[in-house]
Length: 149
Image 1 (tube, one colour):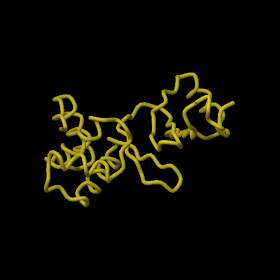
Image 2 (cartoon, rainbow, N blue to C red):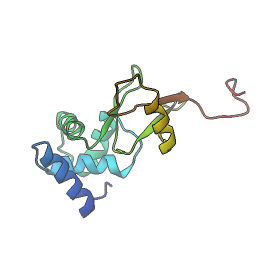
Image 3 (spheres, one colour):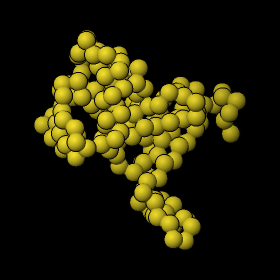
Image 4 (cartoon, helix red, strand yellow):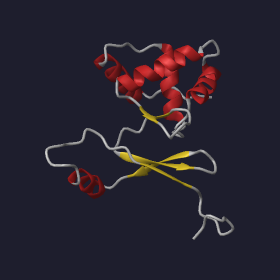
């Protein structure tokens, strides 16, 4: 069962949506709560399945629209790995992603401030960054794996 949003989360949702000229709806609350409940970078289909547990009449089109609105309002980020389905991440702090190629799971990787500063310092002269996206691909280390060192 999906947990309801806390008052703080609801206020953040309302503020971000209002800034984008949108309003909070029951559907948006449910979809946003799905993203916050289990921060596993779900696909649209996974969000849809989870949200229908609380709101059985919810349509896939509505879930797509909610996610598109959230991205447009800066509430969530899209995570894309090559030809795979887009995933959604509510973690807005600067971070990287690690995709486990053996399971397909995506994990957040915290980027220390000094790493971010170093990355910004290597930009060509006269440029500045608005965001940094880093994705790692790999697998769990395991002694029997042929990929191990």
